[in-house]
Structure formats: C-alpha cells, structure tokens
Image: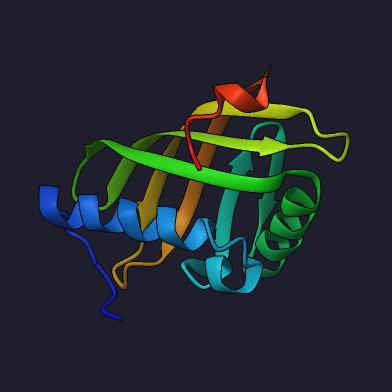
Length: 135
C-alpha cells in the first residue's frame, strides 16, 4: 500500500480521507494506530492524550462501547500538510440503543504522511435502528 504524503492535492487529500475511513471501519486498533506518529497528539472530545500506545488503548475502549460501529468521512478542506473532515458514524450500545455521531476532525501530518496531530469534536444523539443511514 502506497503511503500518501504531503503536500496534498485534492486527489491525494480525498485518497487520504478514504484510507482513514476504510481503516477505522475495520475497528482494528493495531491497524488504525499505524497511521499515526509514535508521539501523535490527540484531542478526542474531552480526552487529551499522546502516543501510539495511548491511541490503541483509546480505540479498544471506544469500540468495546460503540458496537457495530460504521463510519463515513468527507473531505472538508486541505492545505499543504493539513486536512479537515466532517464525519458521521452510527453505533449501538450494549442495551441495543442506536446512536448517530456527527463531528469534525482536523489532521496534521508529518513529511512521511503519518498523522502527528488529530483534533476531534463530536455530538451523539439517539436514533431508532430503522433510521440508520450507514450500513
């Protein structure tokens, strides 16, 4: 697999977003974490942490809670080494209640194409299973 490196063009930014969407939809913390630098800095809602191991631990917790997770990402904007996306994902909790999460992420990459910074904001709201859009 070819690693997509900055500076980004519209085509490479779109490819980077699609690659991220595909990786996250595997729900495999090991695989997802490989896209980030060893010292990557994250803000995910109200959590702040740093490093690939912390990313793996976070993702394990996330997908243990957010069952049947399915994600869609959309390119919002890009520059030399930064990409912003809007996203939507759906998941259910252990009691069977479905949720839709909407949010934005801002990404910054190193010269090798690994994400060194991820800043995420999101909101969840309950939906009925019949209202799901992402399957």
